[in-house]
Image (cartoon, rainbow, N blue to C red; front, side, top):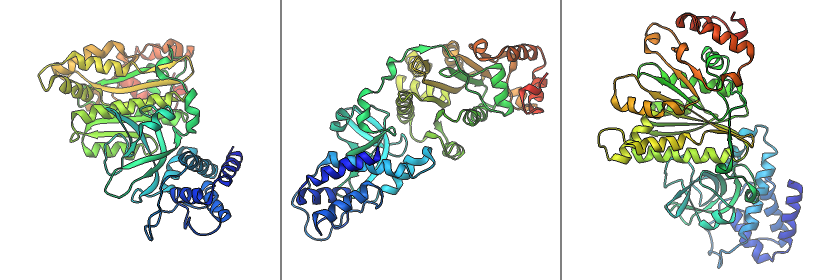
Length: 456
């Protein structure tokens, strides 16, 4: 495809006048576009298009050009061609996009290539280039023209050329190069998430080879597209168990995309998530950000997950944790009035309802933690309202943890609504047999073995 695209760009360049080529050359970063003949200028533009040379920041020396008009569509195709050519040179497909973004430009320049998640704020659109956080120094304004032209949706991961007149103002998107890793012209035929028909889970997402993962796989198998929650008291290490499950899913399911959201946490906890899951998309909102920021972060991350699912991708959304998120919705709804507002519960239910295994083969799984059992009336009300909508329940015991037992999973209450569909007959028999044993002995058995086949 790159060869045909390069030839197409060359032919279109050949039809341009020397003046039009100079304007285009300035726009894409060709050095000294006003010097030399038409052939030399075309060679410079093609060198940028094929990735042989990096774009340069336009010089401020000399008189400014009389006109700044140029063929924006051709400029967009040139950068798309460059993206394809550079991608073919990079072995690691997962990191290709991010490496190319860095190589193509510097945010300190007036003219650079960057990427971010598309967000709609009222009637205005922006690329959030630092995850879900608002950052006026690095965010990019997106003209509604691009949204309508390319059928863009909130949550799209957009790569494009960005321009600004000075370093003190917000950049604006001047052309679209890639959307969710694909060519923008391919978006007209993409599916809509809400049109997917939800079906029962028909395949298992293994939780890995750790003791935690093997216990989950046997007693509470996670199906693609299900709602999973880990419930515990405050001192029962639910976040650590959640991390173990996520690490296991990554280890055993290399093609699954994992998106992690951590809200209302300390800066140390936020940094810990980011450093522990460097290869995943991690969105954090610390307690200093405020209630509105927590809600906004989760909403935008969810839209991002929907867009990835529309690409026929299996996606796992991890939320740490649901109790803090419910408190954020509750505070937002009641303006800090005591008690649980059921509009907050409805908001959480709408969020959780997006988890589904689809008839198209893609899925969105949601895994989260919920705090309960502390005598807190708010927590108990939230647990009671949400308890019945989860497919998989993994309760933890603070008593087991105090006795030095890890993972502190209460085997007798651990449950999956799809175990008969996801487990083999011998696994079902083993699970039923073990459930009759003492909880602590079962966990010790898993810790002392490396594979479930070793358990008799």
